[in-house]
Length: 403
Ligand SMILES: NC(=O)c1ccc[n+]([C@@H]2O[C@H](COP(=O)([O-])OP(=O)(O)OC[C@H]3O[C@@H](n4cnc5c(N)ncnc54)[C@H](O)[C@@H]3O)[C@@H](O)[C@H]2O)c1
Image (tube, rainbow, N blue to C red):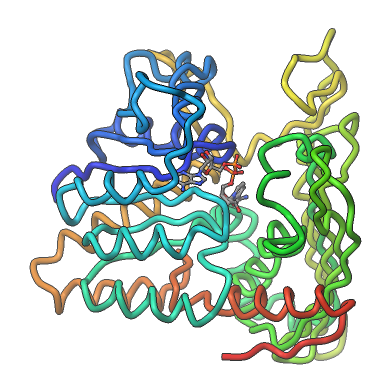
């Protein structure tokens, strides 16, 4: 694989906001070749292909759309991805960006066709499935990178180095929150983000559970999640507000609050942050990140038509922005881009090894480095999800993580 081709399965919000622009930038740099996108409906890939912001940033670049532009755009093609993956030459890359409960089937289909995988978080919803994925990928010398992009925020990497150098002592008590805006309830979420599939903690709380491990190296041991059921506009019911308590291997306790409920008129695209109170030998230590307010205050003359946009805004320069570096088009910057870039380059690196034994050695090195989340080094996330689902469906009782 000199220049791999990349097939994205899924064409929703995360593909539009982060994945496709990142892939186009890598294509522009010659790191990857042809890009295909397969969604379940023709209208999804059509809208993605016509998205104005992406076209402006990447004039002249395009992807192969599946389903194709002819035919009934509203017809569902839930199995098409199997055919599209099967058609790929082996040992290229599949990016998985479908709803959480479909990840396992799509990842296994990609591995079965000998493709490296970049999967949006959470990899899967059970630890057992993540073990199967790990074994399947390792036996074939294929990389699986899980896209926890907060890891590539420089502040996370700064905190990790300092925590692991002992500058914060030992984490004891902490609080994290990530509340997406209310308008999310009106999106495609209402079709899959329902009480039997997911909840606000599993969907977005996992970012901060992952980050606390990433920074401290500690492992979660038990979790309790209290969830409040609310109705989506289409009448479906979901746990749209959650309050979780995660206990860690050193006895530390992290409270995590999540919701699809931050006011649409609030500044920023969401609200989020992390505070860890820690203990040194003779004093306390503090690690506090405002991940929503990053120092920018803008008040515009009018608001755009984008959902959730406001006149007064506190935009994050750090996750994903397009900047004008003289063209042609615009350049995506931020940890959203860096995360995709890191994972795809890791796939390329593994594939560049000459034989299976060396590829497996490269996979072990990625697991051990712990920068990119892999099935082997981030299984605690699936364990937390499993325990969290059990807890939330049982009124918030504490559930210990199982292996
Ligand atoms: N911060 C993050 O890391 C982050 C943010 C947003 C979403 N995500 C993850 O990304 C995934 C998708 O989320 P989203 O916000 O883009 O959701 P979305 O509802 O906007 O999009 C889901 C997409 O999956 C496609 N899809 C569904 N079934 C399919 C099938 N059988 N074959 C092909 N395509 C199919 C749909 O066509 C749609 O394009 C979820 O797993 C979510 O947890 C991660």
